[in-house]
Length: 283
Image (tube, rainbow, N blue to C red; front, top):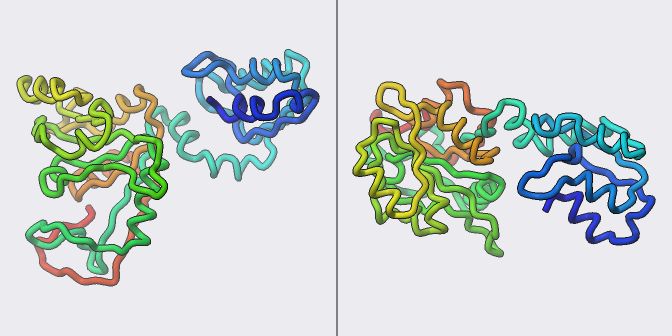
């Protein structure tokens, strides 16, 4: 349920005649949950203070208008900057009609993300890894490229204590549908929440095997045989994905940067030197 409906449920009869403070304009449309405006009216709230308007085309002013038409006092713009900062992922997604993308990477002082032989090793410490899982927990999807999967076989899960109840999508950008059927990310959670983005010319038999394995396959437009990041973002947005944590290698990171799709960067720099002209970098 949305926050308004849950707060009103907990308040019960105490909500009658009260003032409701919300960070975002209440919705007035039927989605996966009933309209919050209806819950507010049933609770007999007297006044609603709204910090920021909702840019979602299905809402955008309709919530506050419906409340005013029902006779409630509505005040808007209270501490709007703070509310927008706290809701930056959702607001950016609604305004740009694509997911907000955070690029996250760990590197050494000389900019390396792995050794020259691509061997897996921890670059950062426990505190940085905990923060990385916190970033995952705040995202609708965690994205890597097929190169990362073939090299490291990541689970892409949220590992926090206590266990995190929300399961972000585990997204692999895999133009040629090469994802191994035994990859950990398929069985580390609900298989259907493993999403494989393939190019529209990917071999049909490989795509069929992935679908038979239970994963969700997104067939995307391609550029030079590779998944078009902008088309992938549009398809994810259609699945109600508003925030993506990109944990790619240099190729995938570079493609998203070149497409102008990076909204925020989280870089963890370790006081180490790896060296090697051929050791991979973040971009």
